[in-house]
Amino acid sequence: MGVKTEIKYPKWIKLIGVDRTKKTIIIVVSAVIVVFLLVSLAGWGNKEENSAQNGVKTVKIGYLSITHALPLFIENDLLANDSKNFRLELVKFGSWTELSDAINTGQIDGASMLIELAMKSKKQGINLKTVALGHRDGNVVVVSKDIKQVADLKGKTFAVPQKLSTHNILLYKMLKKNGLKVSDLNIIELPPPEMPAALSEGRISGYIVAEPFGAKSVVTGNGKVLFKSQDLGNGSVCCGLVLRDDFIKNYPTIAAEFVKEYVKAGEKAESKDSEVLGIAAKYLKVEPDVLNLSLQWVSYDHLKLEEKDYNDLSQYLVEMGLLKNPPKYSEFVDNSFIESIK
Figure: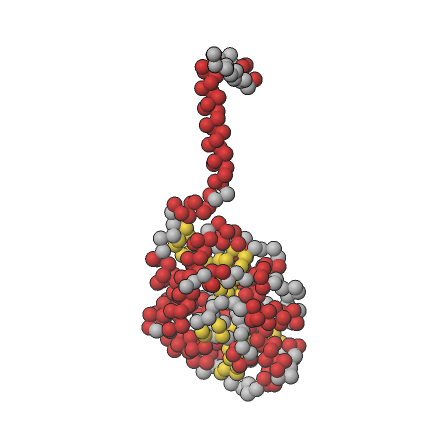
């Protein structure tokens, strides 16, 4: 005779007073439900990744209308539409403060933004990474016609878009190189679009800012170039492509594809051909002469943020008292996407 196995039923089944066959059915059904719940919970952590694979993920990237964000404009117009995995949505902001607030609070997945502001966010506990540069060079010191040399700026009012910016660092380097101190000038923050008018009206004697606002004063004849960023030192970095860590973690494949297309867009931007000019004109709304001059000052052909350049930037931020203990390169920069591009 075979061994008879006795099934021990849970107390809750005994209480409901059903026969043995029904009890067995209840146990089987209960087991199936438990397994289903366990599988569902196991997949919950990949919920966002799965949703992206089953549909098209919208990637929201913030920007300001400046020449330095040109790779984003090109990617949006020429490349992203070919992707089957994501749709690029560019979100325009009117100021760096608004853009920073948006990426800090997760309203957008990333942004083309001032490296220094992203570093500040990182120090405040916002998890993000710089995955590429926006450009190289393209920042010029523009002054009124009566300024012949740096010494003439002493006692004058000079504008920067943000104290925590490469523009302010370049101003500091220029003054230091020519024997002046920051305290020798009245340095103010001014929104970039207001700078050309402020210069022409005599409210300021000079400014340094993202393009195309420097070129605008030069083309109209209201200002002239005193220095270009490359005149004040090599390796100057300004804007970067920054992504939130949660976006990178939840959508690694899409993040890699997005950065790859971005780098291709930078290569296209460097050609500065008629197609590039046409795309830039859509986003920047400036006269052709202003746009052409602006693009002469900017390069897009090497968008990897190198450790030496980053460390130099960090050193100046500390020296100027703008940011104590900047984030380490390894904590803040993720070059894995650029380095994986073949």
